[in-house]
Length: 500
Image (cartoon, rainbow, N blue to C red; front, side, top):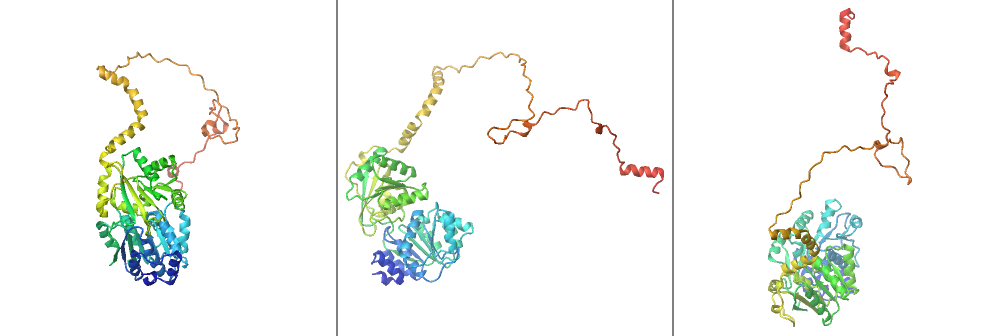
């Protein structure tokens, strides 16, 4: 099947041909006809199989007629991360080269005023993360009543517990007659039940078993002890990798990303970092450096595991085994994309055995261990002991100070002695202390040499008040004639008979 048989417009076909693609992927071949017909679509496919183009191409064909009005976009695409939203924008720019469409990107970490200016001009395609989108809507800067197509990409992550309230609020702001497209690599049954709330008679397009991995990816496990030896294992794997070009290294925690990145740079590797605590400019700069080949390694958290299309990634290393089995599918899907081969190696400690079992159950296959030490021969991975060891190193100085302060107390306790009490000191009667008389204040202060105002309190600048003594001014000795009150005048009139 070719793209001409899918019913796309001539402008879209011309743009697809310019990019060099001639044959659609299975998810594109099945989803695009339903999307062009206006039906809701629930697409499930392996990561790296072209899901972005599966909704981008039909949207461009349908948007050729009509224009967007100010602050009222025609289509809305929700993405879980900023990087994925920026990647979808690049797809619209690439495939929409023959269209005069306005594409707006609403993500955090970018100037609010610049995004508001794009919305004001009118956006045919609005790509956003839920948080920034709701921020615009609550401020009255955006109206979603003109949405014709709603796309929720990476649906399993977007409908995760943290996104459910935001998705529900957004779906209430868009028209009920909209077309909704869901695309994801994994779709657990509990999440599928939630999609029934937002989809109306959807066409389920499933070109691969849910949570399956691509056959072009060579997967393997490497046993390693925890701690610094684990970082040494990773360095040995990188140095000994065959056909190595570049690699994405995943960690579970953001602080581990920073530690591992610093360690790799210290040992002479060209590496960058990417995690959620970095500002948007630093995140995009680090990602661009990896795409252009300035750095060969990039250490990431799961913020880079979802949908990022980085071409020609030869290796993926799981420095930490993911705690959720679905994340493993997304992580290793960063390599082996578009039919190319890739290698995914996971470093496993004894504490990770349960996670490996969950992953093998999810993907339905056994992952073999590479040659090296067996996992049973490695030392126990006691996380509590490691944490206590770290605490002991970090708090050594504080504990030493505490021990020095309590050393006398501990020795007295061992000897059974009571704590010595200070002897009472006889109190002496207070003595009268002669205080010097206050110096008279000057009537005015000298101005500050630096020219600044003296900000001392105003009452400090006043001259002490002096009484008048025996001298009384003459105006105070003059008699005062008081006017009688109304009741006094009436009594006087009655006694004299005046006014009768």
